[in-house]
Image (tube, rainbow, N blue to C red; front, side):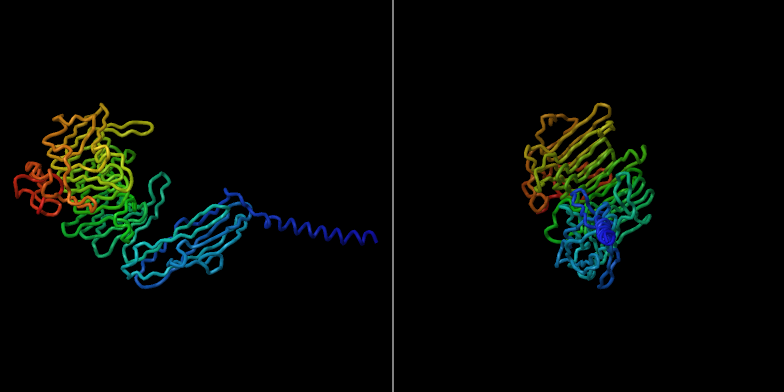
Length: 492
């Protein structure tokens, strides 16, 4: 009788113990804030180039890489009911779910669908949203990105691990026409010994942190015209983004080609307009040249034009409203600027850097590079709203030549380290007289009737090779007493 009594109790205890042991892993939740989710991708691209109204579906995995079970307290579509995207989360068709549990070392699927009419001109070129995940007090997200209008799209398929950006490579010796807008996601690279030619009227839209990368010995040719500029800008078309800086990254041109030409372009609302750079790890002794003409660079979060030991020949350009230097040239190089207007009236934050910075060296953490600098700025304007009334800074090392000259130029300067009476650096100048632009708030840098920049230029500068007898707007420079300073001749 004792055995009969004990045995059922023992079996019951044994079975209960086994149940506890088998379910203990399931019952223990990992609530450590350091325990996070991982995802099969950080951005889901809906990469069908839509030609008709329709929808497409993509999926991604949500992983719990931890040993214990984890509870995702909330998964939701950031755009909610207003989003063109829809979700299916672990089998539930909903744009928001709560308390989804994922076992340790397990995963769930999230399906995302988007419906877009690509022929609707009111759509942005890139439609964006995010799926948000709240876990143990952390918020993580996966971006959703679809194409909202008919265009030619380029997105990265190469992901370097050496610090260079993710990129795709445009076909060698490609020519873009204005038949459709071009939308760049990530960096678009022009490969070594190849070229990208962009014809007049082409609209180039660049997504967040995207850019154009002209790799060593590559070549960029922009053939805008007075009537049809080539425009580089962010993907957002809403009026609120019309002048918003920092929407994309930069045009980055490396050494190795003498054929980079940008003529009649508008480059706006990025981080850096043009970065023309001798990248040492790409090889020394390679030629490097950019011809920049009839171009407007504006609303850059950092620099307008950034040159590193480069050769730049420039005329009829306006560089305006940059958060740092509008023109920064370092580590030497050869630069010739004629009839350039630099007008830095940045208003997005407090600006501390001058409009122009020149240097014949570049310092890194371990070494300082020094190269000869040859800089000439003629028949131009350098002005802005820096509070200390100085818009020019120069810095040099003694181990290489540092030759720089401003001539026939309106310049705002109050720098105790620069002697404005030094004929080696200044000739026929107009110092600290407001150039009286028409409307700096609207970035209209044409001259008014009483501007001190009128007739202060030199005709010999206009007639240098190549001659520039007309201004950025096509007006004659040689029809009165003398050419005006800056990119645009005064007209009544």
